[in-house]
Amino acid sequence: MSSNKLRFFNNLSKPFVKIVENFYPDAFIFVIILSVLTFLLAIVNTDSTVIETFEAWGTGLPKLFTFTAQICIIMITAHALAHTGPVEKILSKLGSYPASQIQAYALVTLISGLASLFAWSFGLIVGGIVSKFVAIGCAKKRIRIHYPLLVASAYSGYVIWHMGYSSSAALFVSSADHSLINEIGIIPVTDTIFNTFNITIAIVTLITITIINPLMRPNNDSEINEIDSNVFRFTNNDNSNINQNIRSPAQLIENNRFISFFLAISLLLFIGLIFYKKGFSLDLNIVSWSFLGIGLLLSNSPIHYVKLVNKASITVGPIILQYPFYAGIMGIMADTGLINVLAEKISNIATAETLGFYSFLSGGLVNMFIPSGGGQWAVQGPVMIEAARNLSVEPYVIVLGVAYGDQWTNMIQPFWTIPLLAIAGLHMRQIMGYTFVIFLVTGVLYGGAMIYLGSG
Image (cartoon, rainbow, N blue to C red; front, side):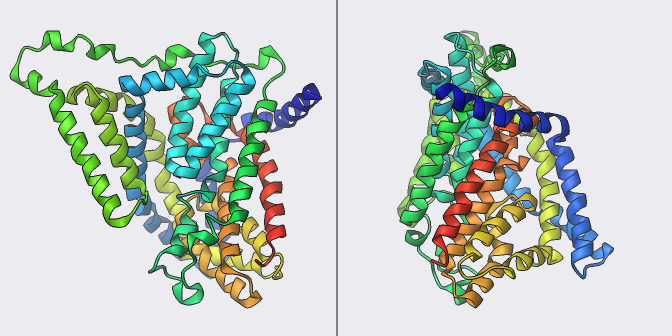
């Protein structure tokens, strides 16, 4: 039975792996093609002229600059933290736990999923780092691990992020000053994130993908692509003897651990002050300062931390290159009204019992063009909420539907693979054949769940 299951899911993944390897372009080419497609859709489906659409694209380009900087800082500080001595030892220990292929894929999926529920940014970074250390640990034990599937397992955990603590849509409608408050009032997180229905679907999904990912492992040794441990050799030996070579006052300052310790404590005290005043609420800035503060605290000296950051900086190139063009796509979608056209076409064919399901489908479609949970809800939410009012559907059903759709198509949208793959050292084409299977499975799960939920 186990062998048949293995062959089934392995055989199911093979055609998608081949299709992605042969036909999925590089992530930068993907965003260019998506930009052209969005431009043409806006011309055909809205009243915007070519010039107006072009202006919407151009003015949208810089709109993710702040977000891009935040993601880059998170990636760099998380990467640096992972390679401080104490954390590297913990991660190496974690990587040594799996005693089989099944345990390796399952462990990475589970950790990534739980981390994504805690904070979406945390899940991406932790997934990339843990997959790397688990692969290295298995290589030391001579357990043959297909590294692309291991990294795909890490990314698959991200398919439940919108059900967790950092859910953009749920947090948006729970705030006291959100833009739809006159239409729907305040929807507490007890109706969305901590709804029994949402928690149940999250648990079921996490268990399902934790089982399926190991079943996709290659059953032919010749298909296994193992990690090259030498590529990821990252040690702190360059700092081990540095104190013996200090000859100048400047070097004494650079290698004085008290300075990095003082800055770390200052940052962590600031975070504590924010939590004291506002309660425990995570955002990108808090996550960044947390990684930075703990990294400084665990580094050997200020100059040691600088070296860790310099080595981590090579991971952010794809983000800096590609994210502005996604902002341009978002500009076209919002400024030309294309997002409203797409959402209205879907909501017009819905009934009270199926609007939640169609919200899920439209959320998945829009996510291909606006792969940002908060940005997507800001432009799609009003349209879907209006449809909910017309059909007497509970607003929280729409929030969950759009959220599930947003996280669902992340499995075939390369936007969020970029930071994880930069850490893991793989190309998007190497993992997305496997995540396509997760896309199909979770599509059935989420779609069925929204049909069951009905109008709330």
